[in-house]
Length: 471
Ligand code: PHE
Image (cartoon, rainbow, N blue to C red):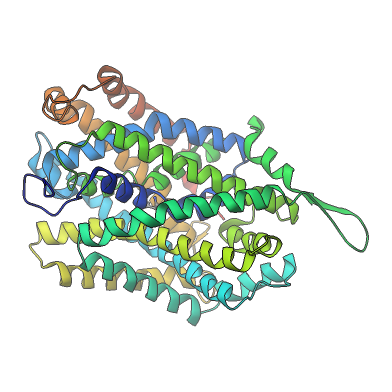
């Protein structure tokens, strides 16, 4: 079987392997932790609408562009632009990608560490019998601490590095094939449990605390008065973050995709799967948020405070809680390995380093950086730059600036510099499959996507004062 792409590099062995690995990168904390809290801060339904429009109009084209560049060049984002026609100036995408990888893994490993702590708490049955307030305090006490959050973060980074040692096929592909569908199922269970919570009244006074159906309304009913420059930029940033686009992750994965894979349908399928998981996560979280009387604007701690409340109310909630956090941690891992792979593959291919030392060095550097993010909620709380703590600052600059800028350059390269014939050749697998909607795709990458990204940026310029954004 043609397991190895023509260049002889390590690669994905099957069509499902490709989709699973790319979906593994896309589906992660971005869907389950980040989407609900950012949607909550930016108006719910109106945000969701913008988000879905950005996925369709900008996200899918950027994803397909990355796959195309990666598979055509058979290289990491640096090597790719060095090899391809007119590519040299675009190695800046590779440089920004490495910076974004550092930023993203730094705060990602913080939150992934929280997830590991919550596996432990779930096993220890720590949520049982706790009130809403107590669950909130439990999270605050933990994440503002010093030793434990850092400990779990380091463990998570070590796990990420270990999988990267094993290489692409052995490590990345196997993880995702089985576990992604399981995560999907468990989220659906949570959705049902959350929506069915119903009306919550104070047992002493009989006063209404909240109703789960209000959460559905919050998520799906667009209140356009909530849309402002900040919400639009946040929706664009969330679309890029969630799809893992704009920093070369999918250029790198594209280079591992076989020549007979239909890239267009892979991009569409991965994007749909990713968006569905985010929406389902919203359906799991917001009804519970309203039922328990939380504010949707509770920031990065939202899911950690709210979900344990659902587990308590579900039959078999003890097991569901453990399973959920285990699967969430695994979803986080299949994303973090894709980010680390960008750094490691660049070091291996461009600096001619061996895989193991490249992994150790980059992991150590990123972890040191990440510890600052983790401590931003505790000892380093006072360090505020441009109105944000270190965690918020890295999260904002990576998602809302670096990724969209990278995406802008990627579509401009694909639309204007790679050459129409090269593009068609790669998308049609050298003429063996028909490329539907080629002209439309070309029009989108040449005009619509770049103009839309620029417009959101210019519109959001005020936001770059960093005031009042993020949690
Ligand atoms: N898409 C991942 C998630 O949703 C995060 C990620 C961002 C991964 C950027 C790679 C690149 O969790």
